[in-house]
Image 1 (cartoon, rainbow, N blue to C red):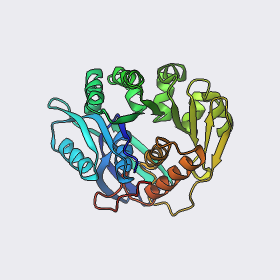
Image 2: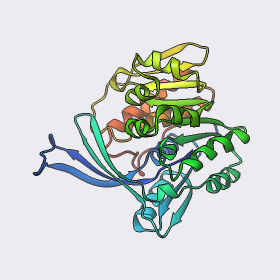
Image 3: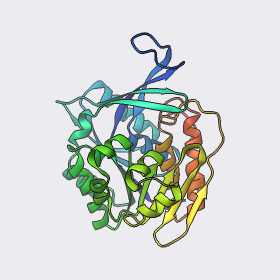
Length: 306
């Protein structure tokens, strides 16, 4: 059984999820199935990793409020080790998610996530001697308040001999900070994950394979996700591997990319080849789109570790 720990650094939020019954009616009412759940790119990835049976530590920040306590209880219940600090003067982050027709739109209050500090990351890594890989949510770099913590996470991981991965997070914040700046922060990471919109910001127009090739000039491996069209994996100086998406009924796409990342990392850190890692990623991504909310249920059956 594989025991290598993955350290995930980044955001923890409360998702107020509204699964819309139809198009939004501006200035009027739109019916929806509304629920409050745990969210945040890093927290979601950590949750799916734990569900998959991988030891995982989440490094982040929440408010000293009821929402923060609930988020930590959910994550602990799923088996995530939480190296999370609580701040009494800021709220836990919140995201309003409008989901429908295979898309989701997010309205975000970053809250305590902006308080994540470099020293917090170092302390968490010092306490994770069994870790072999660090995964960073790109939101940590995209927010000026947490940027130094994100940059320190990548540097500290390299100092300790850990491999690293970064999820590009979101296209619009990438546009705001600029592709050149973001790519300078993630240069020489072992793996970069981006969806089609994010890849277009970072690499320009082109096929997912061409975009992945461009980005391997800066990071050693790149995965570009293209929704129902599947995903591609490129290695610097090596081949490009394509994999199809799983064809499953879609209930809610919230957190699907985070689950995809968890499946990918759970396989890759054990030495699985690219094709197998992409297949495991597609498996968890498919599980996520069949679930309302961004995470597996705390009382669901855990995934099997190979």
